[in-house]
Image (cartoon, rainbow, N blue to C red; front, side):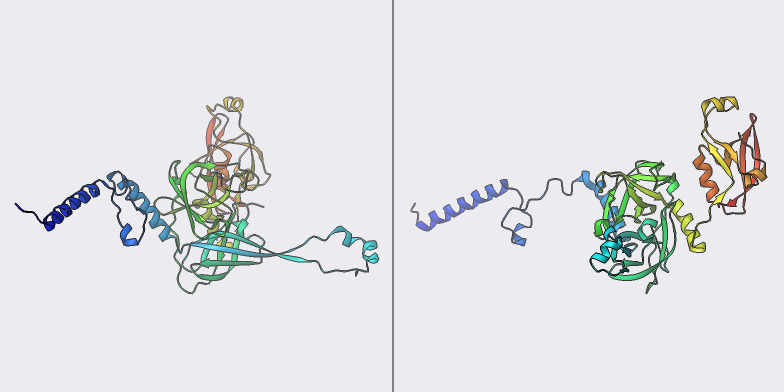
Amino acid sequence: MKTTGKTFLAAGAALIAAAVLSVSALLPSYSHAAETGNYFPVLDSPVKNGADLARAQEVQSVFRKIYELYSERVVFISTEQTVKQPQHPFFSDPFFREFFGMPDKQEQRTQKRTGLGTGFVISEDGYICTNHHVVAGVDKVKVKIGATTYDAVVVGSDERTDVALIKIEPREKLKPVFLGNSDSVKVGDWAIAIGNPFGLDKTFTMGVVSATGRQNLGDMAGSQAHIQTDASINPGNSGGPLINIDGEVIGINRMIYSQTGGSMGIGFAIPINTAMSVLEQLKVNKKIKRGFIGVQIVPMTDEYAGEVGLKSQEGALVGAVMQNGPADKAGMKVGDVIQGINGRKVKTYRDLVDEVEKTPTGKSVRVEVWREKSSMTLFVTVGERP
């Protein structure tokens, strides 16, 4: 049979096509490389869309929803303060002023100091929560929500709890945050911080609750309890919300433990239940009226507990009673061990202080006392702390 050049060309083309198909079957997928004009291979990850990722992607989706949910509920706060610059000692020396022909009186120089912080909306009509130290002593407070900036006034501020309430006059109804229950927070819960660290607007970080009821954190924090988290908190985050996986605010980011000034994975937030009781008082009274019963609490020892017939050191041991104070009028005595108040068990003095301080002045509280190896009940009318 006679073959032609055309036949050879057709056979060769078929062989080349088969070879190309065989090689291409061995090569990885280049996905959308050709469509994007990318001349380098864009490979599909073998992990992408895997069945094992389904649950992780569900959690990721929740984080994204929370961020979107709080995009207009977390606000950027900037402050301005005019401070007087200290005068050099030479300028106060009469001989120095006379020698250089300087006037006896000189105007003191001033300097504008700015600050940054975070806050979150708690009402449709413009009430916003932040930290006391963000707005303390400043001359101007501005709040930015989205692309709009408002002038704000400080309604009230409490240094002890580091909680402040500010107010703006919005052009339309604002979107308040969703409040959670900080008493139900557990170690290991998801914790999300949204704020403006170093002025970087709406930064989202996450971690877990690493401790609850953290106390005695130094002079600034006092003895009040805090939520501890490893969610990254930095300067500028102050006053922002700490949020749980349900999208609810469980705390106000307050401070960090740091040796460098930046985050080291140990941050502290004011429990939202504590904060809201303060905010409600600030809205009504512009200040905090704290209750007291007029007793001094001293440490309880194992020896004393044994002497009075108690099996543990739980309770608040009364070391002194203010004469004619609320507790004195109710019949409380030195040596009494307060074991409960208003149905709440008193394990330490902190339980007693928390309950008394949040009780409205003039209200009577039921106090369970251990005296002479037996329990008794006293009714104490809470007074206002001097």
